[in-house]
Amino acid sequence: MIAPAPPANHEPDPRRRDARVHRAILEATVELLESGGYKRLTIEAIAARAGVGKQTIYRWWPSKAAVVMEAYIAAGLERVPEPDTGNLSEDLRAILVPVFRWNAAYHRGTALANKSMMAEAQINPVFHETYVQLHRSWWGPLHHVLERAKERGELRPDADSGALIDLMLGASWYRLLLEHAPLDERFAEVVIATVVNGNRPR
Image (cartoon, rainbow, N blue to C red; front, side, top):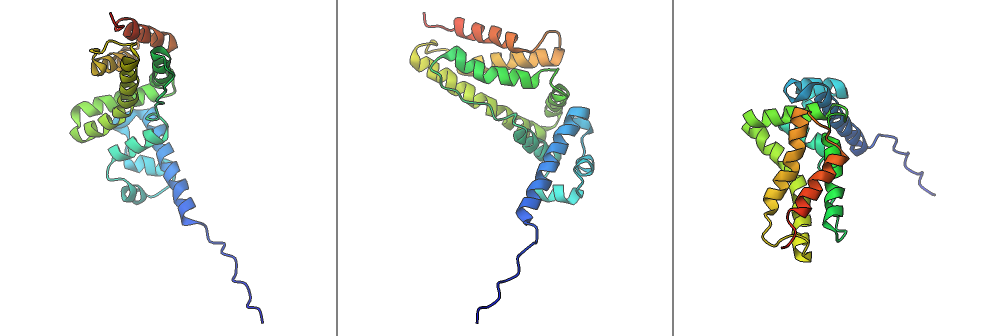
């Protein structure tokens, strides 16, 4: 006699349920950051926007700063490409244009979120470490691009890669903070030309 088949399991997959909740929390965090900035952001507000209990958030993240970091990672801010086209200008363009666009004041509330996080990093040592981690994701690809350009002979061997990275990203931040001029693709091209033309081998 053939044993009857076990009943189908119609229970929801807890992993899928958790993934949906997790995504809702991260999306809520980005939305609140872009509408009110870091200072006004609270775990309670994130929980309310995501439709979850705040204990769920505390179970998965140790602090507000940790939620913010993962939210921006999930939003793609840290996913800077690492191109290797064989041409320094093209490689820098592939990195800087998306970064400048993301930071630009016209990009939803990203400018407010970035400014508020920068301000918080100056007065909150714990958040400062978290914020530096976010920016390291930009430094790595730029450093590799510059070092490969030195090997190809496009940059002087003694060019200071760290200083050039600070110049490129610093230019972005200056326009983001003051909003005195557009932070756009045209500005990215000026920054790239300045770095490339000013550091060619003699």
